[in-house]
Image (tube, rainbow, N blue to C red; front, side):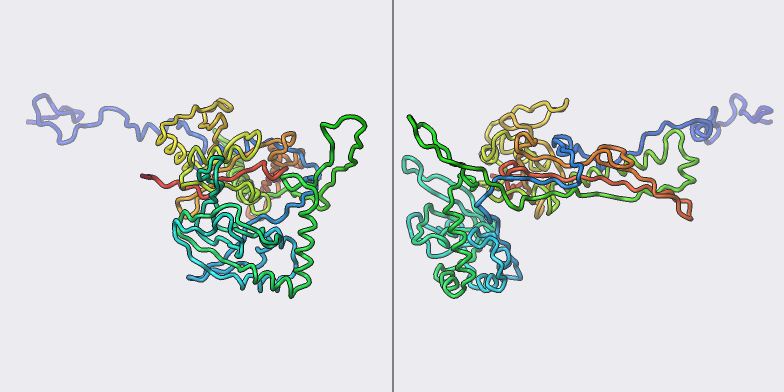
Length: 476
């Protein structure tokens, strides 16, 4: 006897199917008649780009921005560079021009000979490299390692005057001063390497080379000119006098060759097939989405260049007198205070997110919990009321060290300014153009996307850098 009805449905009491029959339309088939809800294309590379948002932008109609300054006698003061081959460490001879007394010296052959007279010397942690009050008979260039400048406080207690690291120099004042003495002691914090030049070796070269002798005399002449503590030509004036005191005459001298910043460019060619641009535009316009993501990538590259470009990048062009070494490795409140006090009106800090986290750990270790500040509707970390903005464009060196920047901004404040030009042809955003380039024989439409920008540091103390910031986890 049959156990099924006429339409194949099991009769009551019959044996059940191995797999139950579907009783309604499935979702896979139903999607053929439905419209999906889509998101706009997403992009992981997009960051907060605080630097682009916080820099005041100056219009540069001529494409070049000239920074005029008062005449400055203090030149050089950079860092000497080294080449390491295996265990051998050598000075890059042209970098000796970073010593103030050799700034602008043109005899490359003599610089090579001078570099060859430096001898390598290893030092251990805790070793005293120089002792206060003793005559300076050697000039030291630190190739690797860290050392503290130690002096005496008001009541005779030891006082930390500063930290020296790779590329810094010791005792170079003896190159232009007779019978110079060490004004402070220098004690190694870590093991490292210095290259030492006996003062007698330099004096022998001066006696043999008329060009080097003229260089030293020229430096002494410039150093003897009245100047401010910043190295600028002094402006004579009189104050506190009475009666018919004869007033000094003066004028403000300018640099004869001021620095000029040309607008840099980041460009790419966006290509879209005409078939895609014509047919596949619902619900989103394909060309607009392609352009949006391309511009986001271009802006990310723009911020990277503003930080790292060797010609105008803030990290590369910060004055060496404004570079501070960490005292112990991680970024401590003491280090941030040192960076803050190097300039007036610090507008913000800029740091890699991992460096911000390392600073937070140091604050937690001391039981400090700085209050965040609100900027443009966002709560951001701060120190002494100065916001600390994240910037993932600041490099991490060797996997564990980074840098923190502190900036004063604005032309009226003699700070850092961004440079751009608006009103350019086919402008899509301020300083950014999208120019139609045509359609090729493969029916591909091309657009030239260009962003023009640069940055200028108006005076050296507008930017400070805390260097060799240890961001590694875990510290006893």
